[in-house]
Image (cartoon, rainbow, N blue to C red; front, side, top):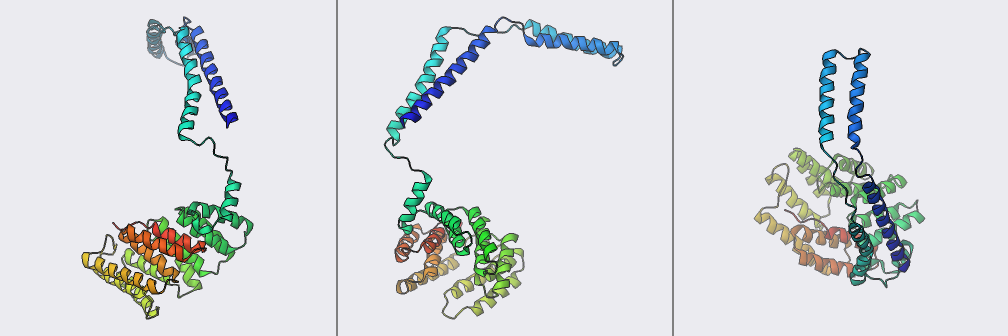
Length: 361
């Protein structure tokens, strides 16, 4: 640290010397002729030369000559202001350059941590890998998983975990990159295509996009029963104006869900909302619909009390509270779920991503 501040002070001194040298050089030029006068004299000579060679006419020569002469006279009338050579000014500049690093050092001693040891990235990575992964923030977990993927470049599962961590760290572009790499390693895995589609929807502010729809279609080619892909493609139809086609696809999806699958209730409500709303399906639900949604979320929370091992249910619950804007319930559910799934970083990443879901407007 001492070496750093010594180097900083030396650089500040060098900068001050350079400034003073340039100022002295400029001061030494005071009293010399304005260089623009030579430019205008050269223009006059060039105009005469062009006329002699027959490249411009006599009238053009007179006009150009008059304009250049006017500029020459105007420049000659303005004398350059003397540059201040007061030694006091130089001492002030030198003192300011010397005080700047001293003031910075004092500020650092007050608000910084001069006794804190250096923490290179490789040391931090080693500490994070040896720590309890569930305690790591998403950014640190993503850094660890990036290192893991370098060690296991042919493992699509490692890249899937990395994508989940990048999503939780609010880095959707990196999440998409990790998923695309995972897909190149395992192109027949429908779940990877589904995750890519979901990542693209999230990156697009929750709205469908052609790229996301293509990913969902690729998922359906490999698994015609893929629930998330079917749901999002039907939603794209409704938003595009094909309400009847989208609702029909949702009904077919609901028919394929088990009778005790709680997603049936949410899907049924989505269908009712689509029938009542405009094709854009924008805005928050109406009062009665909102109360119904709150009731479904409360039912999910009650079910998880008796079935706490349902990781997907906890993720949905945390996301639902986030969408409803109920931050206290979201945080309480997140804390309980993180405790329930301690030591499972993939689920932890999904929970963190769900907690960051934007509330509905």
